[in-house]
Image (cartoon, rainbow, N blue to C red; front, side, top):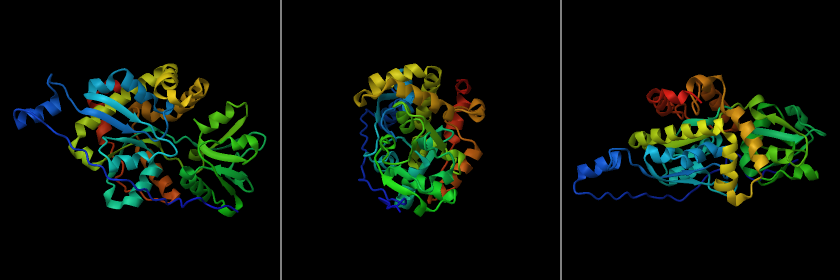
Length: 356
């Protein structure tokens, strides 16, 4: 038997925030021109603030490269603030719709949860995806492995509240009765797997599972994407208002981010150094952990589709798979939640970006 800590149809709340932009100039027309083109004739978009879906690990290395290499600055952004997420942070998609951010890093499940909670007040769109395949895994120790969904029957599984929707959807799509699995509520740390507190846990194969592996344990990963939930991850989300009113700014952000990810894929070790020594320095991250994260994440970011169409894009099949998987979790996403027109325009205008 198990007791859920909260419903997987959880609601999200946030305080509304208003951004006020003051323009001063000798004439209104000159002010508008300067805002768009800057004094030197180049775009000038002001500060770029992007809420992240998790703490600063190699998961966001491409954005670190884009900041440190000056790609965001070259795109027209005067300053950059990548806002760290984490288990106690307000979900990034919620920060997006309650604030004045240009975009945020989220995932389809959190985005669907927001839409369900806020309804028409959450007019969000997914305009790109870092992961072609999500990194979710139910991981266990080789001495008592869960290699197939049915192996979970009779097991105790450590589940963080934020992972409950994905976990219960996994049980449902694989015809496993919830009563046959005992759930232990945990936070982000799966260390209880090593002490025998639970037999398996759900998290990212690129993160939590890797941490257990680095403790010297042999870990077995059962990827959710291989067992009924093949949704894409690392969603880049924005609002309909931003698409309508700040389209060029969004495209500038996407172009700079793509360039950053090209650098990260070509030099993952430099990304490890940026993560450990700078962007995630306050976390005391293990460099070896970040190297393994990089190695595994790179495999989930690229495939034949991205080779032909570019990083951060999504195929029609990936969109359809994601919509079906999110529905299996218990949410519904609008059919038009994905807007790939901006990133397609970026590649049309910058064909050199296809090479990475």
